[in-house]
Length: 149
Image (cartoon, rainbow, N blue to C red; front, side, top):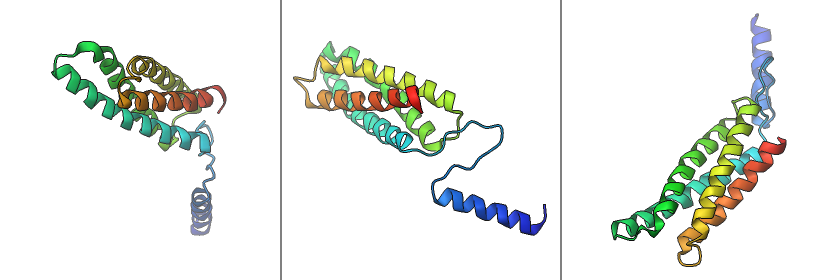
C-alpha cells in the first residue's frame, strides 16, 4: 500500500468514526452504533447502579438478622453482574450481532427475575421499587434488541 492509499483509507475511517457510521470489515458481523445499543448501555448501567443501592439495603437488613431479603439479595447480585457485562459489550459494539442478542436476552431474563424479587418488597422499601422499575426498563430495551436489531 502506498502512502496516498494509506492516508485516503485512514481519512475515510476517521470520517466514518466521527460521524458514528459503522466501518465495514469484510467477514465480520458487528453491529453499527445504534440508538438501541446506546439505550441498552444507559439502562443496563442505571440498573446496575440501582441494584448496588438495593444490595446495600439487603445487606444491612441481613446483617440485622432480617432474612426476608435473602432472595432479593441473591437476585440483585446476579443482575448487577450481568448488567455490567451487558453495558460493556453493548458499548464496545465489537461482538457479533448474534452474540450481543444472546447476551441481551439473558440480561433481560436476569432483570425480570430481579424485578420479580424486588416487587415483593417494593411497597415497603423505596430502593426495591427503584430497582424493580430500573430492571423492567433494562429488560424492555434488551428484549427489543434481542428480537430485532
